[in-house]
Length: 173
Image (cartoon, rainbow, N blue to C red; front, side, top):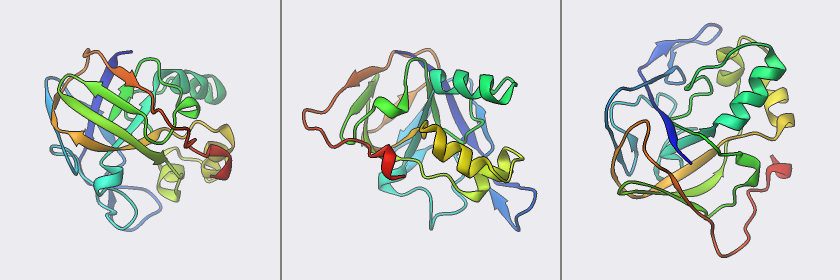
């Protein structure tokens, strides 16, 4: 598996909401540090519902992107779903809580799936997108940082499945 994109965002206004959002992520050239609370220079505006140690990094996979592109009939660029890291072969529905990913010296541990919110629907310009995202069962995954360090696009990602079976419980979303 490969790290296709490292994405960070700055606070930007979002149509239909007061204030700003950090959901608009852009791919970064060169290395970006991952710290226990997330990626360096990445805005987390709604800290009541996003971020923190258990939501430090949001990860999405290219197979899920490909599925969405087909469903929506449009190309989707890395960062569209607000993810920090885009992996080449990750299908989030197959991942378990406790699974880990090693990228260079960085070690990430899966905490739970993303629960879609109205900000994502506004980002996608579709008031029904929260329902569609939930129904698709392609949530992406949140991870905590077990070991910090730099990452950049093109790095290898090693998948380390957990030895227990605490499923992500996507059906419960």
